[in-house]
Length: 281
Image (cartoon, rainbow, N blue to C red; front, side):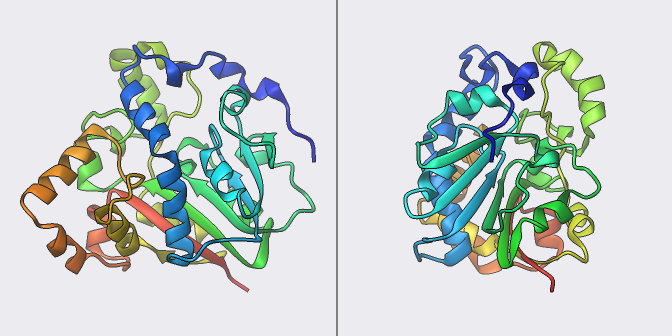
């Protein structure tokens, strides 16, 4: 397998995520600081407290490679990202195979993976019609697809979009964000690739219908959060809410009502979907 074509990152040649003057710098810095916790969260959601080992794992949209690095300690890992420079400047160890590629045109042809990870990335991808089918073709029959992505219709995200920190942006399409939001509030990012367009639970259900059996992991994620895992939230607004919840001591109440059902709670309140998908046979 080739390591990929570095020309794919041409739109993002500058290391904007390391620019301290950028409005999102602090949020991105926190994300890097809790990168290992985010990887551990995936392990918790996939297998409880058991260590995942001896698996062939594909991490799509790996960014700086922290998740790939974590899982490579006991597994064989391939990671991909469209931004070659982010991979180059990241922390990908020599034990991981990095591949610069568009998620819609993955070059893997003969590999079959035990686990495929899409961690906070599908909202940044302009999904092709056959995206989830193509990803499924790379999974072994008993393989697992893991997805985490912000909830478009969560009241919390509507009040403060997880990427921009502004109200109502979560409900906007990528085209509307570029046309109406960026020219006013983020002029320097008008030409940036990978602008996020959030998905609702209904969107996810429609994209994966007939291909996978979905399982939400909301309760386990909330348990991990209140147990001290820092990889669940890191935006200013969400961190403020967690501090407030702990201050007024309602965390036990939230744990008692949290569930993994496709109902009102997960559709309109859960800020991030944590999903496990198993292929339909």
